[in-house]
Amino acid sequence: MEETVFNTTVNEVISVLDSGVEDYAYILPSDITPTTSDWDAVGKTVAGTYYSYLIYDGVTLNIVDSAQSGKVQSVSLIADISKLTEESSWDFICYKSILVAMFEPDNDRWSSIDTDLNIDSTDFSEDNIYLSSGTVAEYTYTIVGGLATLSIDPK
Image (cartoon, helix red, strand yellow):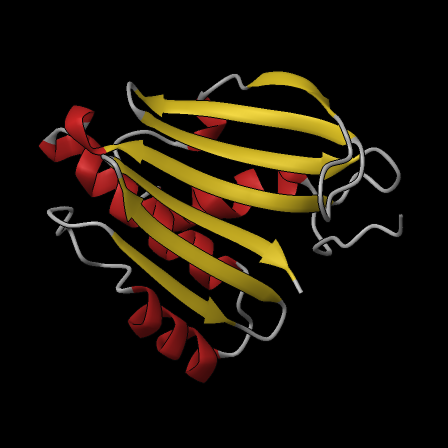
């Protein structure tokens, strides 16, 4: 299978996230040592490494890279809504916004994606699925069964 990846590495994603959230978030991703495991080829992904950054109890950033190229092939940010505190909710919103901006180079399109995904909303009261397509990525933001998940995948 031919890999579909972003033109960035895990270290570059973490560096950009650090720069984007450093003035706003309580915890920087570079301060966290990720748990890593082998990733088997599944669906549209090829084999690689799965990186899981536990930002808070109940808030996790996951990145999958490719063993072939070392480039990122999937990013997700997941929050267990029942475990969110005021502090972790704020960081979750900061991380979501920066991740969307990171993978959308067109400012006009970014604004549209932000609206499509309702990204700044803190309303977790009812299940929803939001979809959007950018110039280089597909975005899915779901709130289902007490979990809020932002997934970003290359086109």
